[in-house]
Amino acid sequence: MEDDVFLVRFWGVRGSISVSGPEFSRYGGNTICIEMRCGKHTLLFDAGSGLRPAGRALRASGVTDFDLLFTHCHYDHIIGLPFFVPIYDRSVKVTLWSGHLAGRMTTRQMVDEFMRPPWFPVKLDVCKASLDCRDFVSGDVLRPREGVVVQTGSLVHPGGCIGYRVEWGGRVVAMITDTEHEPDKLDRAVLGLIEDADLVIYDCTYTEGEMERHRGDGHSTWQQGAKLCEAAGARGLALFHHDPTRTDRELDEIEKLAKDRFAGAFAAREGQTLKFPVSLHKKR
Ligand SMILES: [Zn+2]
Ligand SMILES: [Zn+2]
Image (tube, rainbow, N blue to C red; front, side, top):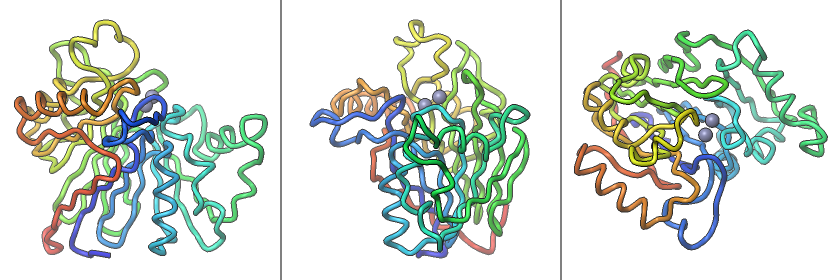
């Protein structure tokens, strides 16, 4: 493990539902799961179907103590949880975090509700791992591991959603999904979370041309992502939460347009890894 690198790995970049087929093979079909490694600390964001391969990789590399933070619990962000092998391993300790249901449901209740008959054959109590469930309120600043600071904020999405800003070793990576923007307006909460970020992982389900038909669905566009990054002085923009109908060729075209508009933009692919070297003497 590299101690002086902030690593980001995309395990699932597809929104709404997983897809398969040759037309999706390059960008991938698994739903949302992002891994961030801050030196020796591992944080996972969301438990879409991409969590399944992430779990196998964690097991292979011997990582047994890590955090899993939920943005919200729509199926595309949670469906991988029952198939995440580390939770069945008694040597594993996972800290689960959520804040989008604050005051309505705890993280423990959310996971219990999801993993039980008749929706799943067994209950959460078959999990042998130690599951430490934590609740927070949007706006809280989390310190899940030594030196790792996670700022939280509310996004615009039916049922609520949390955006995260992860700071470690002088680097900043923000995860902004799922969220809907208002036309010609920059969301102040999002701007705060992505300010001066090295990388912004942003909900680019639609294009501006498609947006009118999808008002109220709670998603955004690459054009809006570019505007936000420009205004916030962010350097990298990962387009993700790709619409399930979007083929590799279409995503190539979108990536090209996005790059022309904002040089740091790219369409995230499943399996892609980015590394940001850090100076461990410099702390934010
Ligand atoms: Zn989603
Ligand atoms: Zn959602």
